[in-house]
Image (cartoon, rainbow, N blue to C red; front, side, top):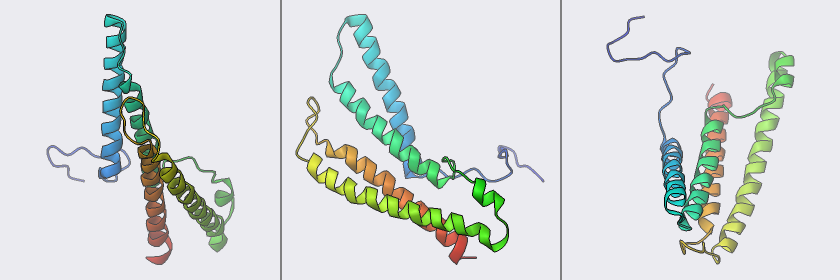
Length: 164
């Protein structure tokens, strides 16, 4: 295989995945979280003061990292999975547990969206003490992550079973 100058082969021979909006948002959240926590630590130990809003910002950024990272891991199939039964089954029956688990996932994600929307509307009435923004932003991040997982699951089901 001929390699052009400037190209780096991927370890498993496949092209590296493209960076999507959730990857970018999760990466940016990670960088911002590290900067804010470092800044707050320096301020606390050098000057004896702490900016209270940094804890609220860190909470929002940590939610972004968690839920966007979970959606990205789900998309890349890097999440935890128990595949013992699938590996022990052979032939056309091997897909049955996978299909059942995917349907259970979609139902579970639907339940999370339902309750997430309710919590979003309840949390609109409360605000962070120092930032004075609605705490509903945490549930919005949660909903975006869950909706991304639903999208990735549906695309994977389509590509696996419909598009053959």
